[in-house]
Length: 151
Image 1 (cartoon, one colour):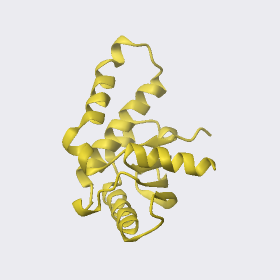
Image 2 (cartoon, rainbow, N blue to C red):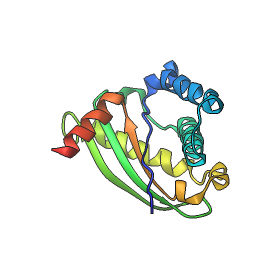
Image 3 (cartoon, helix red, strand yellow):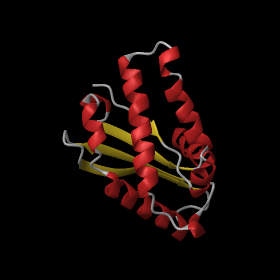
Image 4 (cartoon, rainbow, N blue to C red):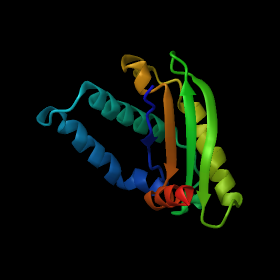
């Protein structure tokens, strides 16, 4: 079974600048001009749905904005789109696991729980979203998490 990894970089600054979202919008606009598979189209659609839903439900206190925090969650979803299992699989904080990191992880988990089920997923092939790995944090935080994970 193929499992999907979706990385969504979410920080408050990203929401105001929307630079990553604009790039995603451009990807949607170019779908018809580039030949891609049905599964790739579904992945692009899934990414857009997840980004929009999580963005709308984002729970984060402005005082906890740190460019070097990242949290990765593994989610197993039931066929009805509800969460069957949610697990924090990895977290990276430049200053180890302090109050800021703990709050970030708690708020990220609340965001995920508030966001599911997502009814739009039901129109996408179940195998494309049954297992999700969502990575939250800044681009730098996510890169540090992945780099730290390899070591």
